[in-house]
Length: 520
Image (cartoon, rainbow, N blue to C red; front, side, top):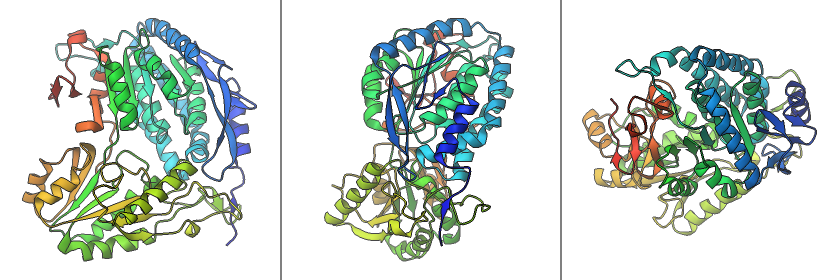
């Protein structure tokens, strides 16, 4: 079977469409930075390789510290004006931005494919979740800004600073920014260094045209972190990333008293005990491989009752053997639809190489290689560069001194731990000092209820996976997986506004002085 990139979806065509749709934000060789309402050529443009096939694409134009300070100052000034804008006008402008995002939904999704390797279906879902999610807030914001005593919640004293991961630029970062502006705040955001910067540039061009107070800069996190976290006048920090950078952000925030939402990694696990619905579990296992498990709610660890291992294996191996991966835009004929893959590449070649090293490390230290599919099994164009691709792999009983025994791989590398007692199951599922989600597969409802209480996970699913959620359901984490305010629905609005108590208001979340403070 000979495959080729579907006509009309190539990078050159995608870039040309960006320049046509938002000429103010894109030059021939770079995306610009958005400061003080203007798209400016500040920062040195870099080079970047698409993980899809190694195609060279313009990298982010990275600003220096002085330029970042200038951007923060402009955002602070803009916040003072925006927080006085009437709510009805804010709703109208956010709705206009949503209409613009809807118009250019396919182009935004195509950028996600090229920049971070999302298959087409998942890229479209990322954009759609951002749009649909914020429309719900537009409908609910009047109620959400009304305190129980009838008084109105109001914007923070300064803009919200957003530092997010590369994997969900629209449904996490842009979604959050739109809710922040709807609630009366200006926002400043940094593009992730690993990808998503062009999608964010196009999205912010649409937001700016609608009159929203958004600032967007690119830069190296280690150089700009303090400015975007501790910068004078910033009202809050919304951070999504790994624990190492999250710890640095928390330390930087320690003496500021500043509002913060720090979403960090955790090793999410499925526990399987006294269980029989293997057909149902198979569907969850397949869906779990979406986007190569490059998401904060992925399940890379399975903790299995030893006497059920043969039945688990009979379910798991056929699922993993049929996982489809490859070039997200490769088709056989021009008229063919884009392939419905489980995943494309991982974020870059260094990540793919690292996953191979981590697998070999586990095996060398005594783990059993249970699944080791080959990249050659993927769906690729002829002669395609495939260094950023990683095939599904799995190791059985990795040793406790494995570098990923307590950490998430953020890729299609699973591990299985066999246990004989309930205590062992709990210890194995709680290996990472807190996580966002966990699940228990069992026929014993009493066992499920008992174990769920002991898991260091914020959300626990019984015979089903859990997800981030972004509307009615609260989302947060336990232990080192989360710091600061919890979000979701009303709580997301509360996190970026003040109520009658002002700065003394206690938010629902993980804070140094109290733990899991109950919502009012």
